[in-house]
Length: 105
Image (cartoon, rainbow, N blue to C red; front, top):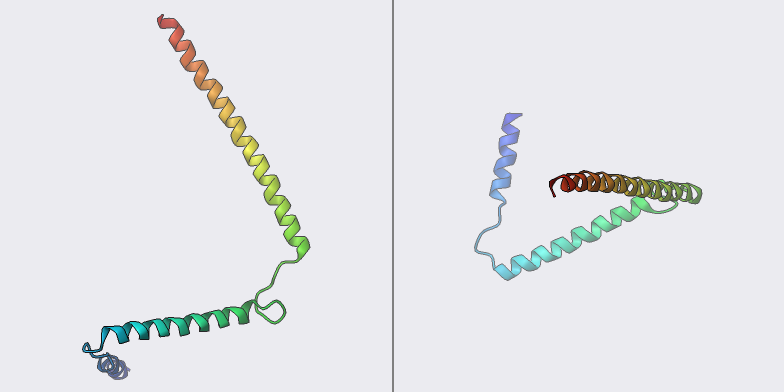
């Protein structure tokens, strides 16, 4: 097993491109390679997310509607809670510092 592994490593080292290649050719090759990989990736994504034949299970309209209502109600409740906390802390802050300021004068 160790012998095969070292042989594979030697093959990888031997297959390295030479450094004397043209810089323009490298960049064009890199762009073409990137484009081909991107197109392949998007094809694979489309295969997985197709509405009827894909692997992704899409939520029903009723499920999305319920989830949307939960998010809206939760946002309103959290906003009211934070606003109430702000009022309480503002009142407490002003009470503490206004009473401290009146004793000095």
